[in-house]
Image (cartoon, rainbow, N blue to C red; front, side, top):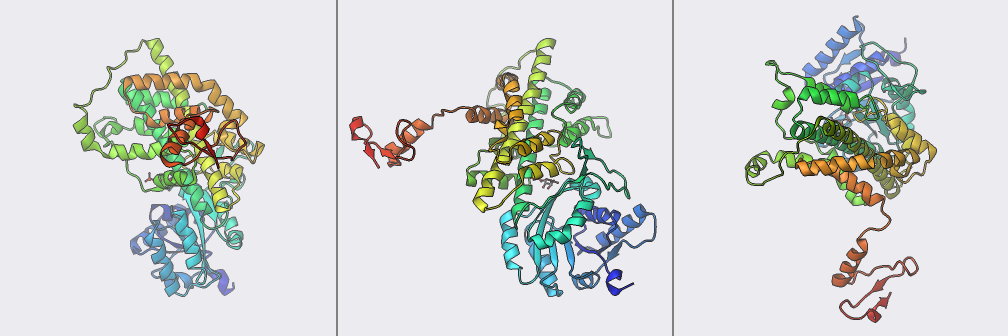
Length: 507
Ligand code: 6PG
């Protein structure tokens, strides 16, 4: 055996929940790993768990107690995976690796949820020290362990090295049905199927795409929560009854991981038999990726109200004390009473509202990526992105196959809402969506993401909007000029408002 063969394939830094599970996944797939964490116990724990799961004394994970030791245990050029919190820690580890003697042809993969512009800056900053590659991971703890969705980007040379490893550990999809091929047991390997990873583009592109994934995740979660709220507070259904409804919905076009886990959360009882969801404080946390998506949508001019509203909903939820103060002060409507027939109709309409809003959220996310692609000079493969979201990631859903099909039908598709399949889905369900929103509004139950999605739909399907009056207002107070529908495109006009039309100036 040569000296190289004795060395590990991959160096791994950061053995938190995601890191440890990625390490175990890599080991299952036949890679040897030199692992390091500032907390030695985490290293010991990963090694112990691997031995337990592996059921042998085979050393697939080698513990290291310093960055220098980690580098010394790796094949050259070194391949190092970081699973550390986004932001400052990525730079701290990078500097430590430089101190430990990392080489310019070594590759460091940042798998955290870094802000994409930071990734671009880091690639430049460290280019003389090592090759910074990024590959956000989606799928939480279970995804990391049994197959995540991976969004790699950076130097193409680095990708050729990483690709076989990433394809091995990523989630797999049945190429015929487009359905996830589940892997649930340690040691289990799925060798066939399409891997949920594809090269996204240059530095930052992968983190941008992951950011939008999370923006859609925020929207998807919020619309499910709003539907739950309507059923719980508006219809006074029990958590079990709502779980039954969601379970039923999960068998149709709403089939998704987020729907599935919502059913489980709703069914969970605490030790005294109470539905746990009733006891969880209604203040939502957020780490920032949804906010970044909303900010980016405003910056590039991509309308994304469902996503943005989902971020607002989390902020509003955090004002618990203010909401408690306001509740007795601000009146709302009486509850609507339903007959069993009208209740059933309302629940069916709510299903359609959820489905249409979900289409809007994904349409907004994909349009945002399309505009960002232009702005940043990337070349994104939208069918490819939809494909790698079909399994492993948090927003995995049956209808991601329909999104894949839409972009495969038309690579240049401007928005999913004008794709023949999705246009039909929206058109067929728009009346029930409207009825649901009308009733929810009359009930006084907040459903900002569901209702702003409808408003988005109505705005996007309307060839004439009131922006004509808005342009008049802008020209009135600021001489900002306007175009006319009856004159050639691009010709600008300004009026001395308050006087006769003959005062119009052509610019
Ligand atoms: C994923 C998740 C993951 C994480 C989010 C949670 O794709 O696996 O999106 O990245 O759970 O960062 O974000 P919030 O804390 O902002 O909800």
